[in-house]
Image (cartoon, rainbow, N blue to C red):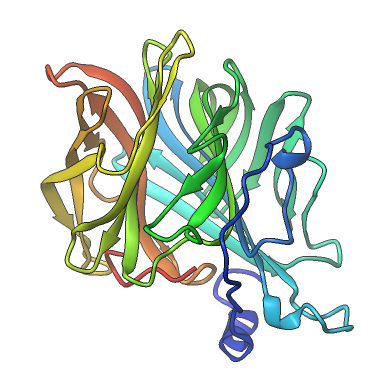
Length: 351
């Protein structure tokens, strides 16, 4: 399904996504299999964000593949039944040009068009791919006006979020996901904008998350940051947000450069909006600068450019803000870079 054509999505409301009750059980996260897909659960995403440099020019980049299980079609015998849907988003933030470039894809799994391998990261959606080659993830995405061909190589072990990879996302046990990150990925490769190619190096962050149910009925969206610190540390902070802007649930982690890990308990992470920007596209107003209290420090998260809003209504159906941001410590010193994501500001997020 290419951008702008929506007959597949138009049919989905009649199918409806079934929701299973009950909490996810604790389990041992095992590799390489858990780098792959988990089609028995309803929602899954692989998410790489990073910062890259080329000759003094700076870029942010985002690559996300989503998999959704359509429960209402699982008993259908037809090969054409949309049992699994794959979506993908890609974006480049051109810091020098102060412009965001983004594109998206959607297709049902099968027929050689889209696939999500279960033994390792083997994601393909038409001409877009995210594949693990050896120990590294390679993202190849020729898009409208830009392209990415990046190799992201681990420099640190996997970081299991929550309790050994089981991460609570709400006040009820059913609101949880299996979730791990790989911070401080070393990036090499090519990035192109409007036909001009740049050889780049940088740092990236990978999240892989899969679940049956994430959002509490009172949650309209979330605020999330994943930050690679210059000293090799890694900071995760998130909150699930109510309609009134209050926090329904919060969490995160901090892993030091030496490898010691602290996982935050609910109530230890606080987001305070400092400066806001209103989108001319959606009229949604986003905080583009935050002070975030974490067990590690008080940090300021500041967008490098305000307009990093993505319109994904042709695939996942949402408008959200996701972009390259700087991390400052409590003394105002820049100590890292990473990505800030904010959902549910244009309309309530529906997974």
